[in-house]
Image (cartoon, rainbow, N blue to C red):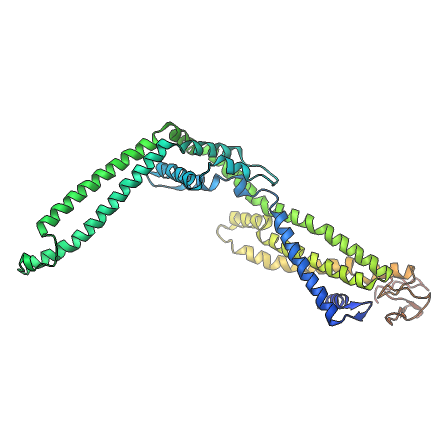
Length: 411
């Protein structure tokens, strides 16, 4: 295997740095590298754009995250919190909810969930002047409570100091505090009564807000577990397949480019157009590297890993780390398969030799030679090998001897 990798790398670098088997000068090599970098940047930009062509799960189900948070919350006033959050968001962004949900599908394949559009319409109805006034009144009372609590903290600090002065027998005229102990105690009690009153008023306003007809409709919609379960199932299904869809579009973007560049390369090799062959070879590499990168990214985060996690979680409970073992075994096998594919199909010298011998071309450089020339007049490559059976000279890399027909696979 190491020999095959070394041979593959040598052939790769030879094709990347030579024109008609002549070394490329440094300036030309720099120009080609700059072209490669420019094209590679644009390839990754195109891959990013086409990967976003299909609508993402978060855009297709924009209500799922907030709805799930509501379902998992255990606080007593979660109904008020989601209502006031919706009204504040509408005020801050000066827009409704349903329209942005619909716009998320513009320019993308797929559509937004109808349930989430309904969810957005209910939230839009919450944003009315009366509800805004209630929330503003609650905020004002919360601010008053904060000020009173701050005043209480300051009074307690002075009250503790005043008590120490009183215990020490210090006269009131010599005190460093503005408020006496009795007066401080009265002020604290009055502020606590005001805080209790304001909290009661806030509770009434919250009840008033959650009792509004549009609020009741929205809360009842949120509490419908069957509807939420359908959204959750759809979101998880979309999240499971989204990496696979992204990789499919990215492969659809790259494969025509790889096919075209390899076709141009093979044509240029046959015709002896060295510069075109070199550039098309570099383009093939530039197009193929992102495909390999995206393939391994898909194997890491796509449907396969999720499938393995589900199986391991079902069979072995929480031993999800075993997925790493599966990848440690699987990735080298995939790499070996890629190497074998290129060695046997793309860069197989036997396949190339058969076509080149029929056209009287050099087995290595594919340049035109005279019939029966032992050495290539362009690259000096020796075209023949001795048959192990009849010891006559036959073409290299061809499966059978041209004199006796004996198999040459052992060569």
